[in-house]
Length: 153
Length: 273
Image (cartoon, each protein chain N blue to C red):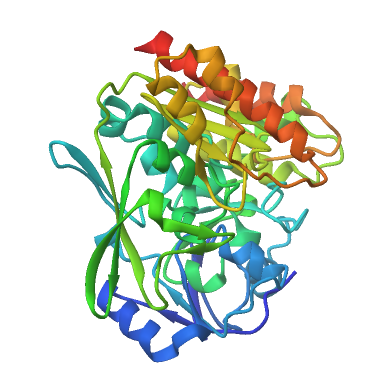
């Protein structure tokens, strides 16, 4: 079937299998490989992207379900050579170790801060329940989220 | 993991969804948010030949106040139930429990109707809706009918919905004392299904994962109705249930959890009211 998705501001149309998952559309069709496939079972959050501005796990969305809608991946966050405040906060707060969960973590936090621009630490931890860090680097990830909220305010 | 091949159809209206379902019969499944069905399809536990995507039927996404009850469209997402001011005020149990389903990403996609129609005894909302004495509205080619929550769940993943019938609405009566609620969910990780969960509204008790269907704790409710104290009601909370044993917990452990969590839930509901 023909699927058209606005990916990071660019319209992308492709003829794909009906069963294609959004994460494979992003990685294999759009060539955007920052979005990782981790558990592939809606648990780990490594594949988190924004669908019309809200975080979703792209291993559990069909490309067909994103037809006509806007998707943002971590590649689409930086503008004019400037890192997004959440990306910068990860850099400054040492919010990553191996980096595998990072694209999903960043996108989950961008979505969280849109819904709640001034979260408490507890709200950040609850908001990241769907993202696992295999290095267990949660403390600095939470610090990065809080620092990004501080910068934005 | 990739699902088995299927033909994808997107319905533009509930009527179109029903005609597609009639056309394709038992080969077809409705897809709402996809957060119950797609994982099963990826594991090849389900392999429908036809998917009817109802996810864009905005006509079935609403939360409206009808005076004595609140009507919720089947395609209302957990995120929208969680953040509804109307539900937070009138039926806080439901708003709170919706906010405990999965994680934020799952709540951005998953729907209340999908959760109900899936018929998984380990899901949170079916037991919550039992405790709230909700009614489910289903639409088929022959018309619309109402099914009380207590008659809806038939066996594991099997509901009273007929083939081709679409769950369209959930009608939740406003509780006698909205504040008298509690939701207790015991999990190993936040995103896991409940090993056991308990929803209490007034003196009605819903049990999550204590058998092949979501259940009411009938013996405990009867004990409360007979004027027995909370501790005595909680002590019989597992009677009449048939929980399974699995990698997470034995049957005996689940029965123990049910007694403990029912006790906590009844205490909390009473302390709030």
